[in-house]
Image (cartoon, rainbow, N blue to C red; front, side, top):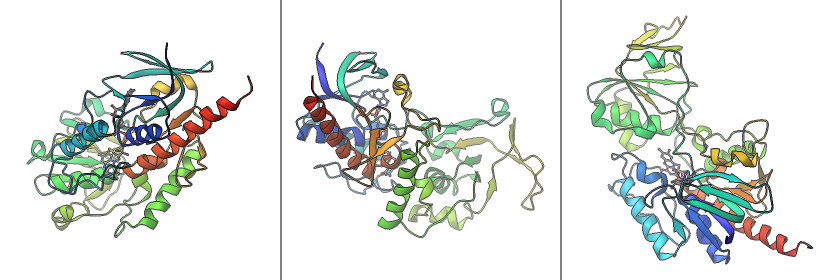
Length: 363
Ligand code: FAD
């Protein structure tokens, strides 16, 4: 069986960047992607999300991103990725869903529904989209209304005129409240009081990345970059803000009942400790999609995959501390489009370093 120098799993921003740089460095590789079409997670985002709504999509290396237009993000980004793959002749195979990676011997074995690949190194770029996270609350199964997660948000029209509970303190919750506030009766619950910031500059971005970087080098589960940057309202959220949507906030409830949610033992001046709701919208984030890496035992006792600080770029970390053949991109500090780009380059350099040191090893 052919042995690749590297296999990249995932063809989102991080995987495409890694493939581009591997190609430039002359590293023979293949990119395995589970989706039927180009676009990474962007092809699955909801229809009302336009390129003006996204927080900003970074350019790919040698591939400028689409502009901030009213085009749907789930069309514009996939079309751009598709063109990019073709123009740079990236070796993407799809649909290939990787089920497991093992690495007991010299080589890593990548098993999927569509076949098995042998490789000397691996770049994992599987993002988070396939692992939506919903926290457990007692009574969730008794709820008579509807429940959605960001992952399957059907767009604002579905919610019109209903009472909607939005759960979560991140950028997605803020965005949903902006869309839903003017057309529904919303209630917002968050675990911690939201931290608002006036704007987002390079310094605050760098500080946020540094915090997440610190977590992953210590082997802790990565926090989302936005959870450490704070939140900001954009022009499209101003109408909801005027309606007081962002002020009608409560702490997390204790349990879910058939017709709403209850706060046990809360003496709350804002109202009764029960709120009737028709729909619960969980904007509670995602977890890294890395279960296929479990046989490699990369995790630390703290639950995260520790990454080594990166020599080539101090703002990122990509190499798995427990198996330096494995690079993780789009993970932790690189879980953004700009981070995915930088990590792709750092991973390609780390792969080449690993392969070169292997070549030099005495036999
Ligand atoms: P993805 O785009 O998720 O791509 C992962 C790829 O891996 C997919 O193509 C998938 O098919 C494939 N894959 C997954 N599992 C397997 C498997 N087992 N086998 C084979 N293939 C597999 N970041 C920004 O910078 N700006 C924004 O405006 C922004 N908005 C966001 C909005 C939302 C709602 C969310 C959830 C995230 C947002 N982010 C944003 C974060 C950003 O989307 C990601 O960090 C970045 O796009 C992810 O790129 P990626 O390459 O890591 O993963």
